[in-house]
Length: 632
Image (cartoon, rainbow, N blue to C red; front, side, top):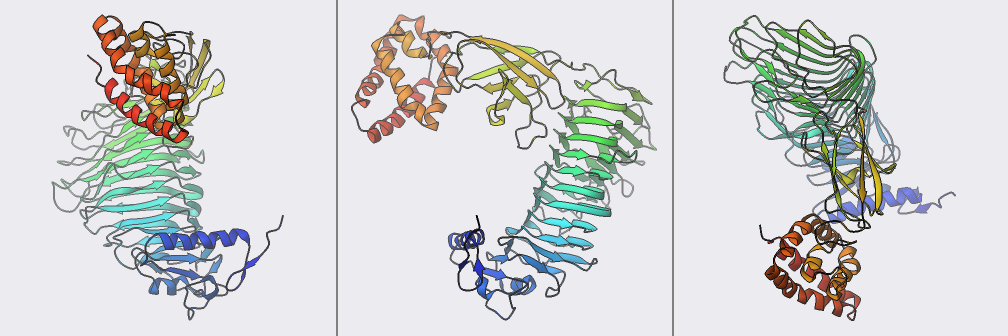
């Protein structure tokens, strides 16, 4: 059905556009009286207008940015922004630029930069919903700028030789850049995002998050640390989808700066990315490298590499160090829960080390003297699993990983013991679980050669799959415990009898875990687990126990807080009930302590709905505090 046009102070608006305008106005009205909304229309606007409504819009974003102040919002209407703009467009500190009801396209001349920073960024400055097309550099952050709070979100970088180039060299300790949910299409060996950190600067926060990189990229994401720059673990390369790039993700650290105490350090997290190469022999999914710059100046890469899926690359991961006399360049990254699939070489370790006595200069696949780990990774479909080109005896560990067949190693040895099996193994604990109650937690403890791999940060990469009697459980109901500990699953209400939990790791390892529920399980419990009250009164059907069950079912179960209390009670109640049941004085004391709750439970049936709910919440707090003080 066609939407009827509306006219508000000018050109006709359909319902969708009207809603967008109203949302824009609401955003401005609710974010502070000092803020101003500005509007730009490349087709009907004029830079001689006021810019304060869609009917009186500016023509160019270039002009709008010269009048907007910190905290203001600039809304760009759909259309092509080209001849009326002056490139590069200078972004202003604290000014938000976003699309209004469609896609504004900033079409460049094929050279130069599309956007630059007019000065330092000291407060949140967000650019969203634009398309930046045909520039040498879509966004250029030149050397020396202080950048703390720049966010690009939902932006399309189309046919730019480099999408985002950030040279962070101001020397500031708190730099933050975010590139989120953007799309990069590359032609002719393009680079998607490259961030260089140097001159004592620290990139402490932000992320390259949930972007898509497609087409012919020489490199999709590059994080380069030089001299005495630092990238801390608060910065993440996470949940990106990369296809067809020669190099998917690169993290490197190269020393320099003339001070032997200054070491370039890269510790950013590389997490839950999906990298699919072009199947060419030279393609690399992930490259980690550390090198010296000048004598006695080294680099160190200590990133945590976890839950990534890297496939169809000539080399899935290349780890390299370049050293010299008296220097230290090292890669000591941890690898956890990654899936490496279908290529020539899974892991290539490459070192240049003229001084064979130098400690810690050969790269490791985890497990080095600083406590790194390399475990629960899956290797499948490679000609060679590990290729070693090292200048001294390797200190390489690859523990507790999964291989499809015997691991193949070229030019060295690797410790692969133990290798975890195709079939997940473990045991299920059902003590205290009862039928007919939702929200109970079931723990599956990992076996000696089993590991569960799960990433709960969203998106499909790295997430374990759990089926309960062939029905998939929501990811939010699953919590992965530390290595070797187990998996905790929150159950729906189940009938008594046999059930099966089927667990599949991202790497494909699968296990089935059978368990059963009976009508009455748990210390002092009954069909619905009133453990403490049953232990105190000695009878599940005692009138007092029935009253308390009514309080639980009719009031506590109706609120999120109440349901949280119920889950906690089912976990902790059996132990407390067992202790009470063995001591006559404790049973008598508990009966007295529960009497007020019993009386209130009966009275609630005669109160108004509002009074009942309010009192139930108050009672919940008291009961929670009382039960947390159960005797040891």
